[in-house]
Length: 226
Image (cartoon, rainbow, N blue to C red; front, top):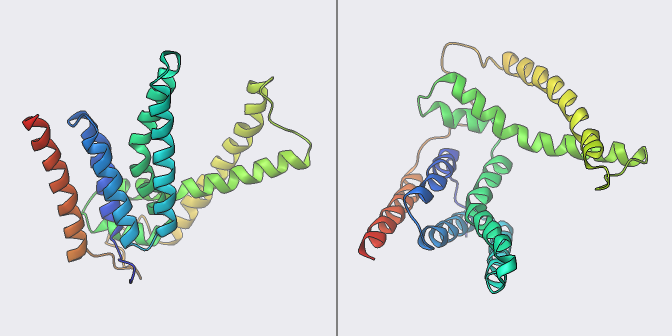
């Protein structure tokens, strides 16, 4: 089966709306619906390994929750894992948004929404800095290993300094590099940018969002019927 191409706007909208729905929907309906929705969406996008990882992590956390609820002294651990499990589908979709789409695709998609340019740039840089942060973190870890410096819980504050201080200096340098790269690409131009990637809303994107909205509306109706 050919992988379905999904507009990144769909993933952004889902990740904005889904977490806020926990305010209005209680119980297990929303949690199960988001899990099934995220797994199905990643499956049609051809991300089978991510679906397996998503289900494995979710069931592992739920297993810890169910086991800890049988012991009164461990219930706080179970509550912690159930809260994390509720965020797993959204985290999985956000991770796919970061890894699957490049900056040009995100900019092209966000500009079709007619949102302010400042917001478009901020969202794009934030999303694309996460993998950069991971790469910089691995560099710092490798540098510490070569110097014989290891993280120890006996001195957590000092060990944390070994990670955070180099990262802060790298953040300052990367901010200048990102700004320069953006100016070269004309990100501050007053007119709408042309792009090699034309991320348009398709019928499949509308269908995905429709299923998402109908599922949330069904949860509201189901909760009122109880």
